[in-house]
Image 1 (tube, rainbow, N blue to C red):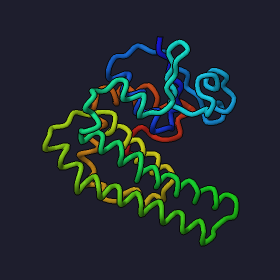
Image 2: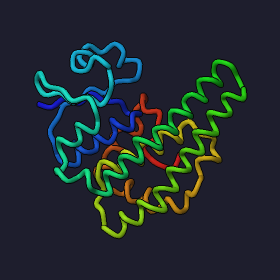
Image 3: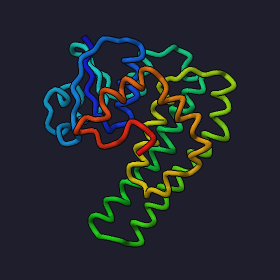
Length: 213
């Protein structure tokens, strides 16, 4: 049977967990905290990089979320608008998360500093750029094509939430009203609602599964 190693707060883990649930793919799971990932022998045996998500079946393993997804998606998925949403999350929003994380680390280690402020501004501006791309270019295509929710959209939503967890409260509200249809699209999905119900209140879940904080 398939076995998924994942972390509640990892956007890449969330999108793969959603995909397996959405497709009714039977699997076992090991939910690991960031600290447990450095120690878990099962994860290390499957993936020496100790990264999640990692999906195993017997002696075989996949440890890249895109490669895992492609095993379970149509061959032409890469041409879809959902693939563009995936790349938006994996490029621009992931970059914003890295900037925001570095800003947090700098502030924790050195206190307020120009370097921390620079990283924070870079993270917020990169996040805003991603939101603009979604609203101006990708969301209209989703609506025009009546695109069903898929792994790329779940990843994008999850990376937005991860970025929110590190941003000042005021910065989270950027174009919130315009984003609401996208938010509702994801949060109204039955599989995503199942994930909210099962994992939102878990004690090791620090990044919300929902937009409202």
